[in-house]
Length: 258
Image (cartoon, rainbow, N blue to C red; front, top):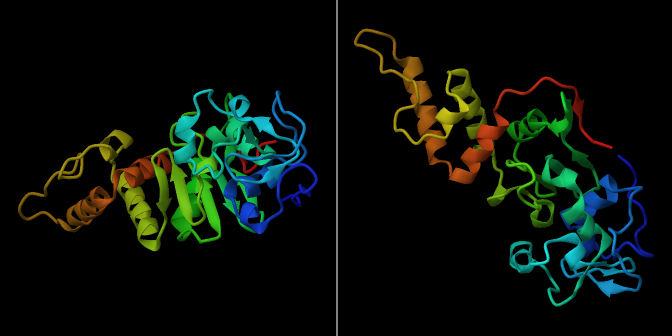
């Protein structure tokens, strides 16, 4: 990964409190070389409405988010909502279209990756890479990942929190129990349960037939147990699992899209 640029003259505060913000850490890596404010940026040092950083390249809030941006103030925990300006990092977090299409993985040490792969019609989200990450271990307190389960629907990076998976439904802790349940969903897929089946709310696993008397039933009860464990998961986790376990499309992985 690239060394994060020095942002102290114009890009925003170097106060560690701001550098710990996942959006700012991601900006320092993924936006390196393109640190220009969106059209409409105005000169002069201002306070960022979202993160509270002092910035020499402020962007009017209305140029980066919807003119009716009141809903962002609470949802994204804006620190200075009275300000009419955003710093470069926060303006980028709201305006870079890639962030609403592809998963973004961020570490506090500055290691970041935009998870995408080449598809038939251009870059697409690399859900297989996101699945490998979350199925491999719990998410550490120094890590964050955003998952745009519905492309272009939500601004997720401004909502990201360390130690959490952020989707349109909010920020979700990711523990070893969640990792194990994701692996169980993969086994449900292997048993023939499709995406629509995973979205159903039946007591018996979709398509699963009770064995007749005298037939072996171990696999039936293993699948049914996995199904019941899956149903106990809150809906935001189930929605996440449906997307992460879908069959991957053909294409070459591109962990970071230029």
